Length: 294
Image 1 (spheres, rainbow, N blue to C red):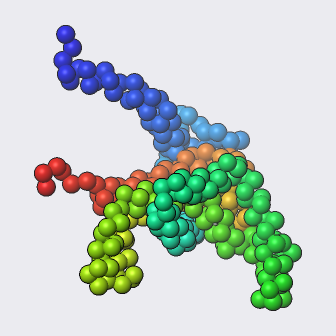
Image 2 (tube, one colour):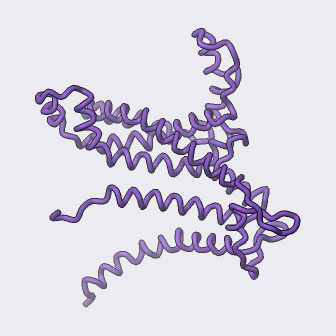
Image 3 (cartoon, rainbow, N blue to C red):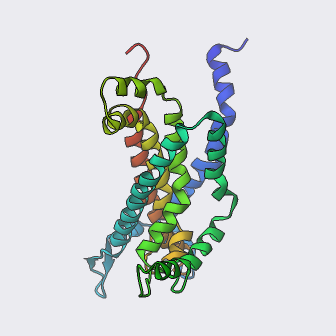
């Protein structure tokens, strides 16, 4: 007879094995690679260990082999943080009103609106970014539209700028902001808003006192779901930034590709992973459920 604890162990063993094989083992291998010395023609020297990859993140060596401060990689991380934060803010500014409108619709119409929000996922991300190239380039649809409206008579020069990257990232990850907020607002009892109006509240007070507190978990989840993928984005900065707005994902790919510096690429990946884990930890500590009975 198997005990209750033994049954629980048997039940979770397959999940633990899958997670260990597909996640823990690759991460462990990546951590080991980051502590090795790079090979002369790519790859690594498996028998030579060093922390040089982590040192190179902040410092570089001059001709006398002395360490000097190098902020180039820190600037790329700072740019990635700035663009990812801007993307989350823009997605929130667009996504919250959209989710609120969807939650206020009859149930039959809600399903149609959710369907419309998810339509972009039907198209490959690469194709969607190429579409934005056609829209934002000089002589593209956006520029011609502004000229036709008389709002501008000069070339916009949007393509291959941080603005173009922000637009592309916001468009790519907007559904990840809309759906969590909608999931929170969908459960909202509309009688709470009616009661607020009956008690003399205006639209602004009902929004800040009733709707926003109920939507806070969805807003937090949406910000995480937008900020984290945007932080490691590769395709959008590569196509819409044109190499002028390099982000962390492009830097990591370059180390495993043209630079052939696998240890440094692995160290950069682990730095990004640490940032993501920190963001998730803050989210869980802030919005974890209180114990039952409290």
